[in-house]
Image (tube, rainbow, N blue to C red; front, side, top):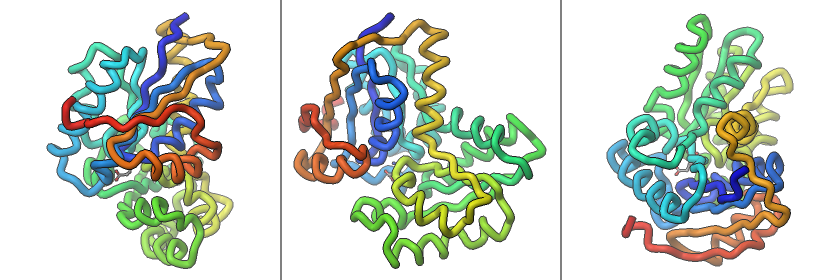
Length: 268
Ligand code: DGL
């Protein structure tokens, strides 16, 4: 039994979609979330910059004494994690492994679509991992740089969003994928719009949800389960606290009722 908190971070708000899933899977776990809202987006930045940011984010959460860190950011998980994971004493888990495994097990025709930020898609992390897991499978990837700003501005299923979905997903749909990885933790908020465009026969894979499910066996293996009868949630951001509380509730689909504090992430 281990009642220390789970640390979770993202470049901003997207990781809250993973936090929502972790809260549902583990009602007795306390969670500390860091959203790097002052430096978002990560998805358009160079690999070196993402690595520098991710090191600081992990150092900050590690300093709070968390038992495990979940990198709830597709970009950070794919572009930086393989390089930095072994530098820390605290276990650090990204979203790519569990998500790729879920896609490989769910596809029936072996055609998997992957969408994400430019950083995630350019890293090739999903293609590489899926290829290692199952060499016969074919992946079709597409970066969707307008999705994050659309989500952050509340355009979950507006005309603008439908146009962007059509623009980005037409080729992937034409290739006949039956499984589509939402490789960015912002994208679950576009699920309805993406689902309508792709059709019922295409299964959408939510990276936060798959990672939360995978934590269960990890916790059991490492004896990390907590049994907090009153789990605590706290949030840290590197910019505007009010903006986070307002928009974060939409990502979390519940009110942000823990404490939200601003920190200077550049110090870490
Ligand atoms: N939530 C981030 C991800 O999963 C995207 C936002 C960003 O570009 O920083 O990739």
